[in-house]
Amino acid sequence: MPGRYQNRDVTVVDVFEIVGKYAAGACPLSEVEALEKAACPGHGACGGQYTANTMACVAEAIGLSLPNSNMAPAPYSTRDQIAHAAGTQVMDLLARNLRPRDICTRDAFENAARIVAATGGSTNAALHLPAMAHEAGISFDLFDVAEIFRTTPYMADLKPGGNYVAKDMYEAGGVYMLMKSLLSEGFLHGDCMTVTGKTLGENIDEITWNPDQKVIYPATKPLSPTGGVVGLRGSLAPNGAIVKVAGMARLQFKGPAIVFDCEEDAFAAVEAREIVEGSVIVIRYEGPKGGPGMREMLSTTAALYGLGMGEKVALITDGRFSGATRGFCIGHVGPEAAECGPIALVENGDMIEIDAETGSIDLLVDASVLEARKKAWTPRQNDYGSGALWRYAQNVGPAYQGAVTHPGAAGESHVYADI
Image (cartoon, rainbow, N blue to C red; front, top):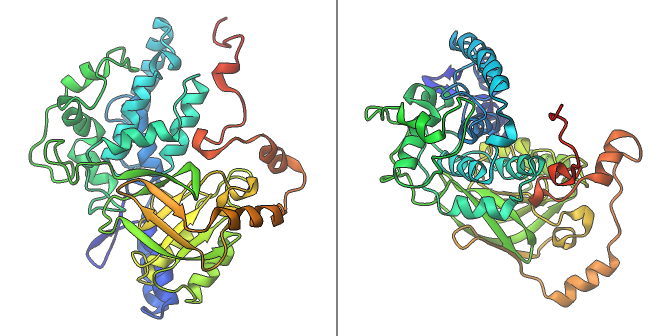
């Protein structure tokens, strides 16, 4: 559930942003404390269309969850009914021998990507969808996801880019209400099987469009004609990158780099108000191998917004972002710095140009200069020279393929479910 503060709905993201506001001297500590106490009033984790709710929508769109089950707020008694219904349905699925891989088809993943774009969802979906598809033995990488994002209307007016919280989406009819409009305009594969034992189209037929709600726009009159999330590619990111554009007025950015080799250093610079307007902040060695683990940069991006710099700078990382991140923030840059991708060769003052309309991201440095820097480059050492994180770093693959650590279904000679 959202909290209420100064007569408006608030979530945990508002707390992150007020930290930056306080650092800028724009509010007293008492305001930070009051918002902190109001922002998370009860159970649950995800108040807007951040990563958890994005993936909840994905589970319904793929067909792995019962219709309109995943966006009910945590305290609602509906949750108990959903749990009971799910248990009953599991027994039915066992009787039918209907398995996840019967549901998780290429078409189902395309449907899921449509929903991420249409809701202005989390950029993390561009990591999770390729990883899930890999598990099912389906080739579906960042570029496949980005192409679907590019051709999908943005329809749900949800935070962080929009005005409404996840509870509002649920009460407006949930993701199935949005899918009804998408299907009617030919954006979805309606013949995909779901856990109900019916196709997605058959499930959607049971939904009646609610013309009185204000959260979900019809596909014929969307908030914008293209998705809320965009894929990028260029000389800075030959293996791609991702940016959420939902709610952004500015889709192009060009500026000098200011480079940090970890998030903590970047956050300290933001708090100290050392970031200059027009800069492109580069946070590197935070990718799957380099982190290791590809953590999110929410503290830094939210603090920038609190400082009033959210739309005045760009931020680029080989790590990832929270679904709650907003502003000109580009993640999943690949190859990552730990593999000596171009992001490892950026120096302070280098000009970087980004165009989220054309899908480009370029480091404006001569190739001969980059080649010389590459010869002088030495790998950065992290704190994990042994143990589970060291092993993870040795095995993990690139972000554009889902940062997976094993061959997935393609490497199987036997399916464990075949008893």
